[in-house]
Image (cartoon, rainbow, N blue to C red):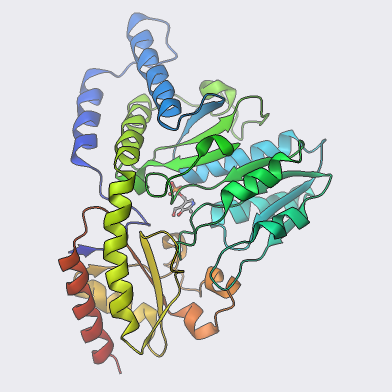
Length: 374
Ligand code: PLP
């Protein structure tokens, strides 16, 4: 199998699996229990928390372990907006956010009376920070702009946005960094709240975290025993959280090496695909090298993806979460692409394990597939 759907999820690293099983075998007590076994697991959990902060070089943030990015995003956005609505009810986001962000924002607008500004993107799928600046108001309390777009790999100017938001003391800056951690170098201390998802970086599924600057007030979305600083109740899955720290360490250590490898792979793929008149590339040249999105001008992407899959090449159409109900890409539509291009996009997403030979084989299979579909 040639697996080129790493933005949807990655294979778990053997090292993580081995450490996870060893830990599961060894320790099982509830970290909230006051006996010695509970204190031991509490210590492990505290160490994992400290390690995560150290890895991101953060001194002013806290870690809230969650089940993944979706939960962390909802906790950050709804938890913050609902806790701070007395200070203002205006929220800003972009038109190409992942549904976890966009739907949370829309829910706040439609059910809780918040005012929402959705900033558009340019033809490359990138937001312009001046538009965020223009949208800022006295009652703006949150700006949520993703770092790397999950469909196109477009990189947003989050450092500039962070600077703009910092000038407005009432507002915080949230960034969905799910597709950038371990892939694109980032100054994490600039971001008030951001998220990590382990399964995007060879970690365990059901594992993630919200990183938030100390002093920011949010409310929990689920009531319970008050674990995770009173923000995320439920008995701690501490072995999973401990593994998250290791997963982040492994990803950050190899960030630049993996980035260069991905660049080599997707640059090759881009150059070769450009020779094919059937193909239109949707990913910007200066985007994340881990994602290459293209559309077929006359062939149905759903048919091509199925045929590729029968030939052992796994790629995605639009974001995996909604690919089973096939609808055109709202991200490409926000970039001003026509309906055919929006309906027929294919996302190739690579990881450090992929090879140039796999790219070559994929291109051969793709060409044969396109030829065979009349
Ligand atoms: N945000 C982005 C940009 C993503 O790509 C994804 C996953 O597809 C998510 C959020 C949701 O992540 P998780 O699967 O950890 O909930």
